[in-house]
Image (cartoon, rainbow, N blue to C red; front, side, top):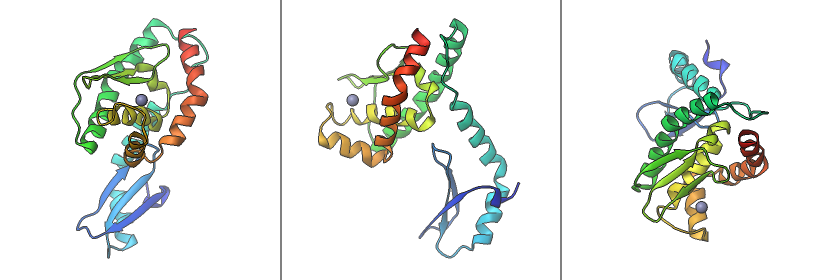
Length: 188
Ligand SMILES: [Zn+2]
């Protein structure tokens, strides 16, 4: 595996070390010191190819196809289990970004809602989110986390949301277009 096999976005800043990051949409970002040569960066990426592969595979697995039929009990259970592991991890990430605390997180298979946040700061997510792309999962998680700051859909709420999740509008549109079909295909 060569570094040139990957599409890498290089962001230079006044930092001392090189850092690699994979975004939820699968983009590889290298944060590099100002003067580090491209050759050095590529060598580092090549060295880290196992780590990159692992993360890209994980992203792909999360991006399952929308089912065309009602899911079986076993399939729903598997989805639930996956959601129970994955979603709290994302919630923790966005809560930390905001410096906010939440109460409990529950995951359920729901017929209409993708997520909610109670006035006590408890979060609830639909396990069927696992059938949407990772960035869409993140958009729903970031939305509910922002409710910890604003318990409404005011301009301030959306400004904060777009600040911590710039692709929000794109993802929200995706969910509006495809979400109904996902809910129907599972619940029949
Ligand atoms: Zn909301």
